[in-house]
Amino acid sequence: MLSENAKKEIEREMAKYPEKRAVILAALHLVQKEEGWISQDAMEEVASLLDLTPIEVREVTSFYTMFNMRPVGNHHLQVCTNLSCALMNGRGVVEYIQRKLGIEVGETTGDERFTLSTVECLGSCGTAPMMQIGDDYHENLSEPKIDSILETLK
Amino acid sequence: MERYLTKNFGKPNAIAMAGYLKHGGYRALRKVLKKMEPKDVVEEVKDSGLRGRGGAGFPTGLKWSFMPQETDGPKYIACNADESEPGTFKDREFLEKEPQMMIEGLIISAYAMGVNTCYIYIRGEYATQTKILQQALAEAYEKKFLGRNILGSGFDCDIYVHRGAGAYICGEETGLMESIEGKKGQPRKKPPFPANFGLWGRPTTVNNVETFAQVPHIINKGASWFRGIGTEKSTGNTIFGVSGHVNKPGAYELPLGYGLKDLIYKDAGGIRNGRELKAVIPGGSSVKVLPADRIDVPLDHDSLTNAGSSLGTGAVIVMDDTTCMVRVGVVLAHFYRHESCGQCTNCREGSAWLHQLMVGIENGQGKIEDLDLLMDVADSLEGSSICALADAAAWPVQGLVTHFRDEFEEHIKTGKCTSPDSFRI
Image (cartoon, rainbow over the protein chains, first blue to last red):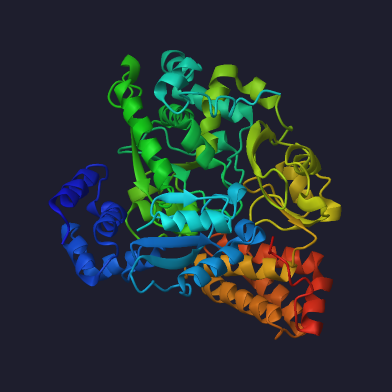
């Protein structure tokens, strides 16, 4: 269930557009911020707030890569594996994190602390290799830097 | 050479309105509102020769002139801040370091086209930049550069931020509009063009962040100043993004027509680790690769097209001689397969097939016939879909197989990679 604050935020967003439907991405971002992922229930709730059918919400949710349709760990490690990062050993970053955390790409650690994903270009090509965790970009990665980043994330 | 776009980047306060004003910000908007008619602004931008900086290079003033003057309802502008072309990281420079430049350009453009509502479509992953942008817009409203009756001119303008959520195809102008409307970002057929049928069926113009950022400079210093920079048909400065195997990757503001060789060896410090250059993609992943013996070329639209590639977004990806070009093919094919919106059969199936073939070659399961098959499938992708993503998926394959056929054949014959340490530092 979306918080009252989130529902108010969605209403504020609606004022920006001539049609309610246009706030769907903002609504889904709010759901994910509060719940970490987009569940069936959440999609149905967004549908009723926006006068849409659940399937209309589902097709949008599944189209956009950022929306998690399954629960993820507290920290979602999204490592870029597109060309500029690949040229700078992006694959090595993935493999290092896999070894360090004992999970494969797409999996979550047993303590639910980390989920590991690979993603396409994040627009950080000059500071490759890099990954996104939450809102933050972590650029110019090296093994020591990855160690210190992960240590600070509880 | 004046670095008019980036000269204040990194200075104290440049992000803030106070800093932007101190550096001469919003003089252009004042000039436009006091002394220019909307059609004068369109003419000035036309005369400047400014071409869109989002990758397609369409003449900006001409695009603006497609908007109907009189209309019985709202018109819209969407600023394309979706920046997702692999290798490209220039628009975020404006968003992070001097967002008011783009905002001022956007307000001037809105005035020119009789638009009162603009949306900045910013890629969802740019969360940090989104916060900076929202703060910048709040400051612009506070200073009354936005809102009702701007600077007493009678002109109203609102700018709203619209976050994307991870979809390269939403950088395509009609996919972007579909996404703003709250749908899957599946592109529309053109015609009708956005100026006739855009957001919610209304006349709409979509332009890139950097395109808008150029506008205040054109207004302040004039079209003929702008025409004096760059080449005859590719005017002005742009921000080139250099990445890959160079000593100094980063964003470099230079005039269009600057030499690719100089950019790599002078500005970006040459190839890392004393290695040799093997290949360069000069304009983002969608443009064809240039082998090392073809990099003596000016970075402008015509020169790169004549060289068998394209300026694209000016994203220069540099590959040294440790690079396995089959792996490059796998990485790029994966991208287009992932990002295809799926509505056109040849793109949906073709992009998947290209990836499958590339992976097969890399894994030692390729057959020599696969190379002609790759070219066949790529050819079938060109020019036969609703948007250019299919072409963008085809071009890298065509470039790689054309220029590095020997390497692909070697992979197929031996069943393994000839440079196994490729892509490792």
